[in-house]
Length: 482
Figure (cartoon, rainbow, N blue to C red):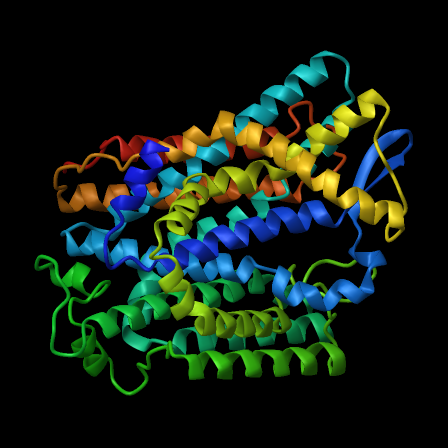
């Protein structure tokens, strides 16, 4: 508690605390949503889980709010833009930012993968079937699909920040047009056109995070007044211009800022909801923003125009609540709670399905695992003790593995590198992120019941650990002097 109070008290005065609150709320909604809609049954004598949404069509419109992946990418864009601007403001480079940014993401993820692989190896050695082991690990690693996309948008942050500096809101508009083109491929063919939506849609939302940061900074430092910070080279200044007003004038008329007022919030909410109704009720898209078996389209995989309409409505709601939430977060108690959640936010996200596996396994071993029909009175009555029990299990996991994330420290500054050293570090940083993405993607694409004694494809584990190791080497300062 003392460390928590110290962290809360050291919060810089200009920090947008609302971003941290949104991140904490989003992770809470993901966890409670996954746990709440889980239906447990038996398949060939073994416990099996599936989503209850298919049996609860009345709840599908609720996913317009419950699908919070857009919120993650929105606040991620804001946070990445803010930290990149701060790094460049201190005379740092985009490559240095990219290398250091990986630490907070990689360490908790690596811990999860190594623990799951070790547990799978023990289970396999004790006679568990390789397909059964893979099924359990597959379920535990479902959250990693999010990190595949997020690692990509983080790696693309420096060039996308440069595009934002030049073209502003025109960038997400173009990305939304590409999503529409991908949706046409899904509807009319060829369907492969939609695969790009995994990148274009989340990049579009991430760019809105850039726009939010840009507009907030402009409000704090109007045209003609420079933001605090030392002078920088032309190379880094284009990523985080100290004079937002001057930058906008240089960029020309296509450079428009995101309005942050309540009027803009109400407009975005109304437009987003209207578009959702037209696309889902009238148009060809499913009402649910999450996967529903049997539906022709999936709004989330890959992301669709309907999901971006939901993101627009969510952004409007976020802007409407921004000022009252900001005032509330000035109170010590609420802000300490937000700081506490954000200290272990990725750990909570990564381990919440593992908590469900452990609880299901324990109840099954004791012979007291309830399996009431979805929607029955017994199923609804079981929701409360189910959520409470899962909270206890997850709290224990966070107590064990949370310090890996919470104690991640910024690496010490490294010395200047020559041109050759900078190019080498940039190349190695890109290769490191590519290894992370390849490893997580290979795991996500591997069949649910593939015979994997380690629970994860060996190729996936090797690729991920190679990328993580390379980035760890760069964070240690290797290659920083040319």
